Amino acid sequence: MTIKEIAEKINGRVICGEEKLSEVIEFAFSSDLMSDVLKVDRENILLITGLANLQTIRTSEMSDINCIVFARNKKINSEILSLAEENGMVLIECPHSVFKISGELYNAGINPLY
Amino acid sequence: MQYRFKIAGGDFSNAGTVASSVKKILRQLNIDHGVSKRIVIALYEAEVNVVAHAYSGIVEIDIDNEKLRVTITDQGPGIPDIPKAMEEGFSTASPQVREMGFGAGMGLSNIKRNCDILNITSEPGAGTNVEMITYLKPDAR
Ligand SMILES: Nc1ncnc2c1ncn2[C@@H]1O[C@H](COP(=O)(O)OP(=O)(O)OP(=O)(O)O)[C@@H](O)[C@H]1O
Ligand SMILES: [Mg+2]
Image (cartoon, rainbow over all chains, first blue to last red; front, side):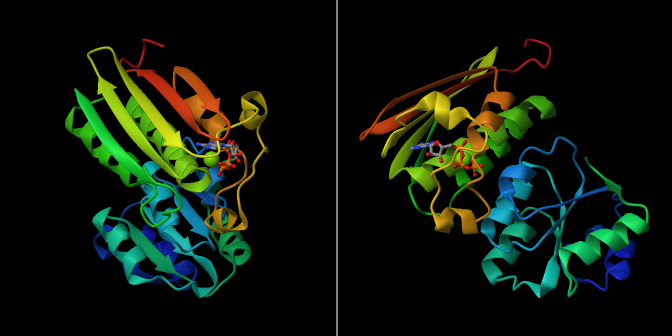
């Protein structure tokens, strides 16, 4: 699925990285635990998380994750936003829970990692 | 080539800036992406450990044709039992560190997985020294 299709499927609002909406994502990982994200081997995955802080972005930078969905409308402050923009990431805000987002995208054909 | 960076303990808003700088350097040097990724992940884990568990630290990076060596020396509480600390799941992280998404006790084992040689020494009450060596040719391991 393209990032644009993903955002539409989950009623998400893209808050930065609009120029990357046509990129295709095949795999996703849901986690609030950055230690777990850092063990992921595959690149170009979607991260679904409830954790909105600078370390979410830093961890994604190190892991070459370019697209993050924040569940339950977590507040994305300007510091988070500018670090994400600096790294060319797409951030998507979404009202749904991590569980619902994961379920919807799994049904739509996005693959799990483990 | 040599580089030197400082890490401030407790400063979570800057945790990762060293790993981020090194990631850019490795890209400029055209280091193999897979090799670079292992170095950057290991360094980030070790950098976050200084921020989470120590008071301050110095990172020294040494690159030659064959390998990259990272040495992180910190002032902090040290690690009384290193084999225990290496076990997955062992963590003394504070609630604040856990709120940041860390403190699962997985960092040191992930560092070990992502470098070719790992040496940790520590003087409890004084600090910790972490040395990580990674060979730059993907097949040199
Ligand atoms: N630089 C350090 N100074 C003092 N103690 C440390 C240092 N690095 C690690 N430790 C000790 O070793 C433990 C295990 O470290 P490890 O990186 O594996 O897990 P963590 O940092 O607690 O959690 P995670 O890395 O999963 O976020 C830490 O909880 C801490 O007690
Ligand atoms: Mg750690």
